[in-house]
Length: 358
Image 1 (spheres, one colour):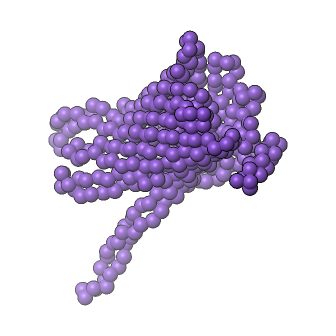
Image 2 (cartoon, one colour):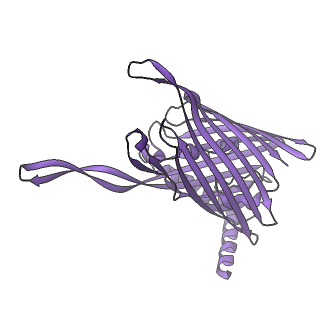
Image 3 (cartoon, rainbow, N blue to C red):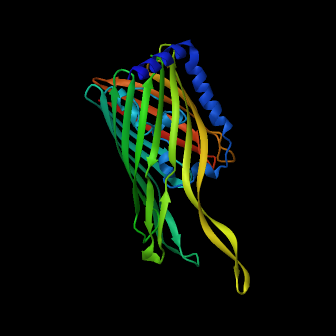
């Protein structure tokens, strides 16, 4: 404990000299150097759960692994929950291309003097899809739905260090006549307040998460679809009496995959072409950056860059948004809007959030 205290103290002296901004710049630069194939970034199950959470988070480029603000979301790091200043209820909805929908519902609250708890629900889906047979005749309508239900807890130890964990249950209902696939994942997080202005943090997401599909009802077999395991490291730095905050992070993700490898087998009839299944690990790295400015007390202006270092047409994802707040007696109402560029289709995704602090 004495060594940890000395380390934190040394970090504090270093960052008071401007090291916080150097670290943020280094994080973004590292992400920008990671130019990887596009498919390596979004492969794996549960992509809907990695698009962001709420208008504020998406506006800031999803660079919130080290965001110690009062309207913190455990979606980004459960270790941030001790920063919750009061009970908070948030509802969000996003409109995407091709009539896709994305909704969020979240509740966070302090738990005693040093802890916090959070409960969230994410839904993604598309409704009223025309179903047609081989002749092109309409046979009805189809829909797809995916859900993520998460329970998170975080606790602060001393004045500087906090840790947290989250358990998430996933469900995917994509194929008619096939039972929905389910799975669960574990998130772990840690945060350190290095100075009064600088906060550094790390989180691991979706440990053990995978979908177990059983298509025997339609003549298929069983299949396991794994989520990528993501490790995120980042920092945030506050300036101008906390009216300006800069956030940055780097994410490394790993996914177990399989591929068919052609081989030649020598038989009595001569050489024959065969294939074998080979397991391998797919790895990707990307950076994120966010900036929030509060020119007046009731207004926040936000901008961000997600997927820094991702190559191809599904690469860089810029975003921008506004937030306003208004007191209603003992209640604090906050409204946020964000526009961001969707990956792949490159159209604008609009997200709105209503937050109520009780």
